[in-house]
Structure formats: structure tokens, C-alpha cells
Image: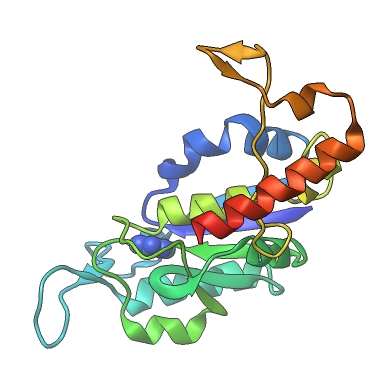
Length: 220
Ligand code: ADE
């Protein structure tokens, strides 16, 4: 079974998204095991302090190295084969191929930060740093949930039809998905393209490929 360990100050953040739709089914089916680990439990001081102000001054607070590194060690102790990923806006951009790469590992540990970021020395204890995009979230949790969702749906037997994962946008070297239509045939005067109603599978396939390429060129 694939596993995900979430190192976080807000384990409750994950309660709702993990218990909806596809992640919920994957957990219920025993395909993935998800465990949220409270970083604060690894703070050894009286006040369970997990953050502190930056040396050199400046706004905000940083995640302190001691509790974070202790939580990473606990995660590695539980799963010595784990791949530890720090979520940070200064990481490498997350992609569909990275999601696929993660599914090939026995499991992942996602480290979420709060406040203005992590003490830089924590980076030495993780295997890689991932960013969701060029914007700053208030914490790593929504980024970790997105990574986890993208990984879960690619695990064997999670999606009803294995083709749906394969045919997804981006699966094919950054080629976007084609436009999709369902009933009704006419909605507020907008018609479903004739080719999709033609029953000619070769023409439909050609049209979809053309549309994918057009979209991919336009959006990039
Ligand atoms: N933490 C804060 N912002 C983030 C982002 N864009 N990606 C990953 N982790 C983050």
C-alpha cells in the first residue's frame, strides 16, 4: 500500500479534502494510507515553540529547525524508505510527471511550513523542495493536499478507467486536453460541434488532436 505522511502544524486541515471523492475512495479501498503528524509534538521546550523571529531582522516568523527536523526523523524512522518533500514557493515547480514519479516510490512525506518559511538549515534534511507555482500560500498545507491528490488519482486501481489518467491534460508532454461536451446538444444557443455527433471515430479522434494542439499553442 502506498503511504503519505504529512508533517504539519494543522493536521485538521486535511480532514475534509481527504474524505471527499477520489481520495476518500482510495483510502477506503486500502490503496493509500495517510497519516498527519503534528510537528508541535516534537518541540521539547515548555511552550512547544515551533517558530521564531529571523536573525538579521525582518517581518514574520520562521519554522525552527529542532522540532521540524525531529518530525522528519520520526517520519523516516517509521518509513526508512520514505521520500521527504518540503513544500515551499522557492522549490521546483510541481508537474504531472513529478506526480507520476512519486507514485513509483513506496510512499512520500510532505513537509508543510507556516509563517514566513523554514530555517534554511532544514533543507539539508529533505530529499527535495517543491513549489506549486509562483505565488505564496499562507502555508504548505494546500500545496501538500494538491500534490497528494495528484498522486493518489494516479495510483493503480484508483480511477474507474485506467485510460482517464493516461488521457489527462499534461500526461502527454504538456499537451492540453481537448474540449469536452455532454448533453444537451444545444445549450443557450451553443451547439455541440457536429463532428462529435457524427459517429465517425477517425474524424472525432483527428478533431480532438487538432483541438488539443490549438489549445496548447494558445495557452503557452
Ligand atoms: N508554501 C507557500 N506557498 C507555496 C507554494 N506556492 N508552493 C508550495 N508551498 C508553498
